[in-house]
Image (cartoon, rainbow, N blue to C red):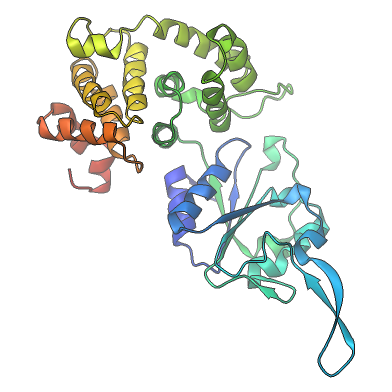
Length: 352
């Protein structure tokens, strides 16, 4: 099967007919769950997640109860679980489907093909998406019956540094993580180690490290990095983070009292720091970031283009972002010209 990048996968998930079920294949930590949630948000549907490894057949079909029927007598009916029993359309995400035992997999047959569980029909417009790991990922995987696999549209998800960096910039990933992955995109994802090492770099692991950095002291960063992304990638990130502390402040660069460093990795860090400022609701932060990006453009067109492209592509608008955009668009900045010519907006044909 062909592999899709994260943006391509989200596009497929939201444009497939609602009565067709995609199945996403990919290694652990690559971001399957997050992309499904993004698709649900785009479709304006609540997302309900079931884990194939944590349910029994009766969790889907429901437990039986006896009720009286009109004309006398009794009948058995099954009561579907409350999470699924809804009157409005929703997105049902079945994660780790191919890790479920065969009886559980069989319970999904009618749900995936007919959108039915016993007597209960999913509301019109509801969507079902499945996902699972591959045998080569050394994850818990069971054979999928052909009767089940033939009911779904199978696609593979591949790691894509550019797409993840755009997602990370929009979701507040720490500047030190963004900058490192921008400088070392080969470290975004690695296959699970054959020696059983528990931590290794994946998009999920880098996001986890970002969350950790917001709360732990910097004297624990080295241990935290190794615990999230593994010893090798963790050591490389720690060395990068130590060096990044030598970078001048954004305020000093904007005021002209400091120059942009020559070290490419420090320039990446400054660009990521500008993106972090744009989550603020203070217009001064956006104006500051615009001045710094213009200075970065003289040292590295690549970093400036990435920073502006990621900023303008954000869905969540803030006062800082509005001020940044006004400064970049109104100043006739060469950076904006480069973004229109080289960045995502040029590739997608969006207006400047």
